[in-house]
Image (cartoon, rainbow, N blue to C red; front, side, top):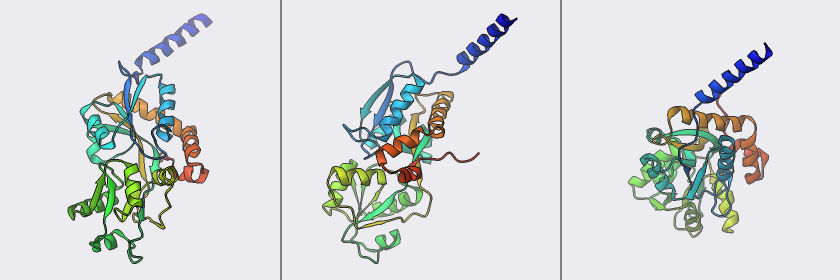
Length: 267
């Protein structure tokens, strides 16, 4: 009787294992990083790299990683030339070609240079002064409100677009533009790495909550049930504290890590 019961349980376990879709592809998963301070820096790794390594360990899948410009990553995800990327911000356009699994929060601040008058306390004030310009990285998405203001400034030809975040901070320090919208993941990294002075003014001009960011999965590469499996892995890492430990290690501040770690909304 015990043998029959053990055999029946084994059959159930095998059936469940066979029914569960593999998260892997028939080839290594093409995963791309982009330069984003504490999230990823060439030669140093970062939060995204530690998350990716943990996903690789838990899934058993093989990964092939690369470092690419952010704008190129989004194009290649849409075309199916890449399978995954880290720390992508979700929006309606990207939902058409990607799934998302959030694990960090980006609470973007507006860093203001010395030429910005003290009277400028909002984007409306900033836009009202035609001498002021904003710097930004091509293809960056910040939040619905910030993105709208960037578009307004672009229409006025008052946005200086650069190719990467390191250039953004270098040029901002040189006074090539008057403000940037920046994540603490960037500011903390580049102030240290480039030995810059912290901007005297850092303000929050968006009353909305922080923006979720996380794993991006190309719809051309993964079936819906595979995407759901990767999302479940990320949720598992959030629930067991793995993500928070990784974020804390890089930020060096448990309180800041609590604010920067995505919390699953209650069902």
